[in-house]
Image (cartoon, rainbow, N blue to C red):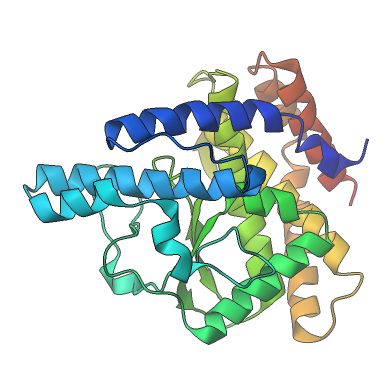
Length: 307
């Protein structure tokens, strides 16, 4: 089986989990339950799922602040109310809102700053929408399209950074399917970072859908953080970075110019970092009692090690 095919092994479990959670979210928001998969399919459900978590967080924040009008707004919205934030027609299952990084929120729901869809949400600029569209096309062309559609439904582009400088990207568990990332106006670099964060969201979704819990110990050394991390954090890194390595190796067959030079250096760097994780990765994955998930993590790690 192709390595990328393994990523789809728990799709049906995640679909059922999403549908069940969507029903609960609708109940909390006092919204009628919808049959989201009847026309939109899996990708449409993923977007609805991501939007629903924004509505829940927005409603909770409004309720705590005593803002009745804002609470009513969040409780009355549906995924269709954000259609003007959608990306190009070739990739209709994503939103790309305009983001001012200086106005990102910070609260107890996350250690990282975040953005919530709201009454003032507007689409990203034409240039950024084109960048996202090109990045999504690259994901499709390299076999990562489904992963990004299902687990990076809302794409929040932050700061433009010169190619070669440090770019931050992150996702948070309270907003599954939402990705926050800097960019360098290079579609292939954005694709790489979308795959990385979609990988994190994928793993979180599979763990939740299958009821898999990972113990907090022992600690494992992470060469990316240069510090010891819990099995959960270590396994996340040993999953998300190999996915970007597989993508990079694939796209380098056709990439040219400065982005090819940049991605080639990135792949060399990741090879070096991943090389030191073999023993501890083998130990860490034994803490996962689900054999299919363990096999998938091992296969992707090994595929990246063989590059």
